[in-house]
Amino acid sequence: MKLVPRFVMVEETVNQGRRKLANYAWICLVLGALFASRASADVHPVPLDKNVDAAKCVECHEDKTKGKSVHSAMAAGCLSCHEVRVNKEVTRVKLITTTAYSLCLTCHADKKAADIKGTVHPPAVRDCVKCHDPHTSDNKNQLLKPASGSDKENLCLSCHQTGLNMPEKGSRHAALDLGCDTCHVIHKTGPEPTEENKFHLTKSAPALCTDCHDVKDESLQKAHQNQPFGTADCVECHDPHQSPQPKLMAKFMHAPFEAKACDTCHAPMKD
Image (cartoon, rainbow, N blue to C red; front, side, top):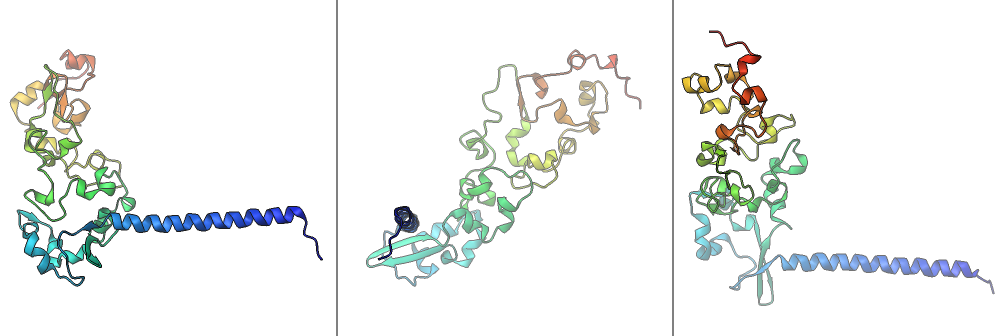
């Protein structure tokens, strides 16, 4: 009889234990994915045939097909995004993908954050339905709320506190009342590290600012000590949203400027 060294037997026992542990972990992973899939599928209150069509869905969910801004995918039918599963007497309805984000990317591949070079708005990284209704909305681009109004009405103010809680002697940009999308295009970005890309602006300053503020306005020229502000970067001196200072001035100002003594260093503007 051939004797096997004790250390070899111990090593084989350890390897068998490792293989069993790996198999157990794999089984847990598969079961976890299965249960997660089931958990994400809601039980439908009414039994459905597994071959149900969109017309049947609309009998109850007609409201999902009407509104000021209806998702174009609705024209493709409910089953282009949803899946009906029937198990005995239980009907479940789920998305055809694991997450809503991955479903949106089947059509909106250009919004895939991993492929975008530039600054991506955080909710757009993985959670489209935090801002958009996937079916219909009374707001453009199927937003859950408009991008304007009070803190309870404005979708952007659900996360951002811009323009709220103003200091008593501070100033607030009137453009905020026109809506955040007056200056911002939330999905806009690009590889170049420009202000326009980093802050999703419709265009960079001063071009964006001069859309509303006329550089030929005499009161503006006087406020800027007749300096050529029309070609300057406005946000070097002004906060575009709000400020604890009057006139949206930056929190820290150049001392001669604050004292309105620009001519200490700068010559008056010539015609």
